[in-house]
Image (cartoon, rainbow, N blue to C red; front, side, top):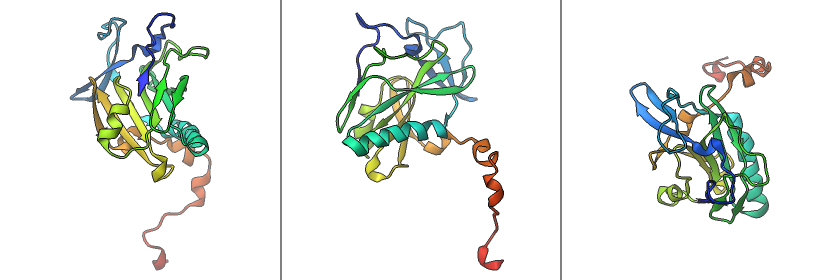
Length: 202
């Protein structure tokens, strides 16, 4: 996994790529905004680092799955967070991919870049490996929440990693993927389902 330097010469800087600094504190995982010099921006208070909506992963995962099924090649989405609003958005950077890895350009040349209210905070990528020693070197190195999928194990197979200060650790996907109750309850479909203790006792 590599990123063509978004701050290099002849490449426009993208403010959102300043990213975050994740900090594990007593009240949970907090996200602080980074300043252009790489240090924490003292003008802003750290905010709680939120889970990613399940719908966002379903939509981006569908694209990754289509690329794998059609070409057996990897792909990557970058995940951006608006910290004050706890809102996530996914952007597809220009990239080159083979069957094992991806090289992406986070300066988004020729396409609309992430808006300045966002900060780079994660990724979702195809990774045809199951061993952590194979997966972790392929994760983007910035602080954030990184999801990987291996379609050899099924289309719902997701591994989740937190990168804090350059160190990646595996975490439970269920702790960091948030479903929207209104999506399933608010549309009336829940009215068609009755839950019982044991069907054969009815």
